[in-house]
Image 1 (cartoon, rainbow over the protein chains, first blue to last red):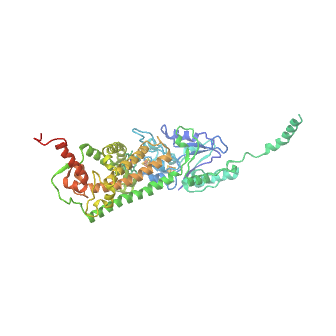
Image 2 (image 1 turned 120 degrees about the vertical axis):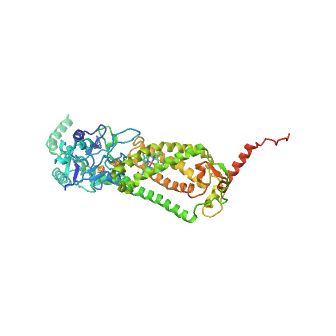
Image 3 (image 1 turned 180 degrees about the horizontal axis):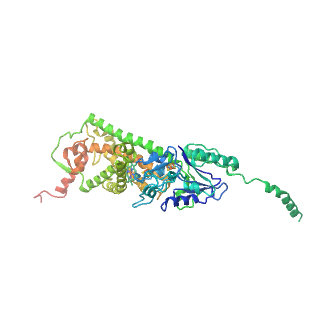
Length: 198
Length: 332
Ligand code: HEM
Ligand code: SF4
Ligand code: SF4
């Protein structure tokens, strides 16, 4: 089975936010929630670079480890998903997640939060594949249709890569060799405890 | 003029050379760290890597926050151990104490007379604090341990329903709990000011081990400890709890994580301490429960545990019956 990962080649990302928009549109993500965002480091300074970030689908995922109702599961493709019928919106996964991936719709009293929402790697959720209920709760299930995440497919510069970790790492390494530089795979050390030399 | 000519000449000579120079050195060649190295150093320092985002949610500007991993360790290991040891340890100690010392009886037996110890307001407030505290504590501990203890027993659907209800209870009962703490402070602070006699009481461990009863006023040193623990501990637990209820309204992710740590540790320790308070107020000591039940305590119980308070009450009562300036009938 594949080990699905994301890799953002920040030497290519031009902060066009096409991935963010594609994601919001594909899954009808509600207002105020961003499953993916583009962060620009050193904005306006030498060494400025942009990185498109979403849930990294971590190995030994911290969100799953702290969830008080244990509602996470990892698919055979190593995609980290959760069951919204079990989630209580406590916010613990956001405290534990190194990438700020979990999001909560604001609901009712106080700061009370609705059920957590995050990137599904376009793999839906625990409902039956490609059903209406799955779409409403989690968005499209492209993986079940044999397609990769829409963000990476839409990327105008092909900076954002999605797919099996070994394959996308090989593509990235080839780019680095050819152009002679690269700043490495953002988040890989934190998410996969894997060092990815530039 | 000559200088300008020379400059033009130099420029012409440099022209082709300029066109041939390579593109500006890439990011990593400018002494910048690679992603992996940056993440490693940030993790060592516990620093976030953040930048700028063009969406309104400024929290999203944090690219990587390595403290999340520490927080995971706190929640799953540190807090679980502290709470587990505190609560189970206290339970064990109390059971042991009960086996060794048994129920502490009223040495002089029931006198049959009672005197008022707590007013209706005092009792109502105590029970408001106590019930909200217990439910807050149990629903909180369910977040720490329920996943391992309860979830396997009742299954995921029932466990989510219970935990969700517990979360609402935890959020709403925060308010009566806080109100009760404030009222308690107003009602009882005066009688809980530490005094010299408390040292003697503490030295004799309140007579818990031996058989003598050290003297005490309305509250003894043990009760004063419980009082100040409730007021200060409860105050800090409440304050940190409100930070958690209104996430990100006063602080950022680091502050939320810290508030959570303070809340969890202090709440667990308080819960354990209150088990001892519950024990001594119920099964642990004959005659003690009535103080918070009916509000009337047995005269002998009161004399044994709060001698100076009884004296003061008796003096006060005598004065009400025969005011100091009243003269005996027929005296004038
Ligand atoms: C009085 C005001 C209080 C407020 C505002 C408050 C609020 C909170 C909040 C918002 C949480 C996070 C979880 C969630 O959203 O459900 C929490 C967790 C917790 N609270 Fe409280 N709380 C209060 C009092 C207490 C008291 C008195 C206790 C114990 C006796 C307690 C014990 C706990 C525990 C053990 C946890 C969670 C530990 C874990 O997640 O593993 N709380 N509290
Ligand atoms: S990135 Fe965050 S939400 Fe995604 S798997 Fe890792 S810890 Fe969980
Ligand atoms: S918000 Fe939901 S998914 Fe996240 S830790 Fe809480 S219950 Fe689990």
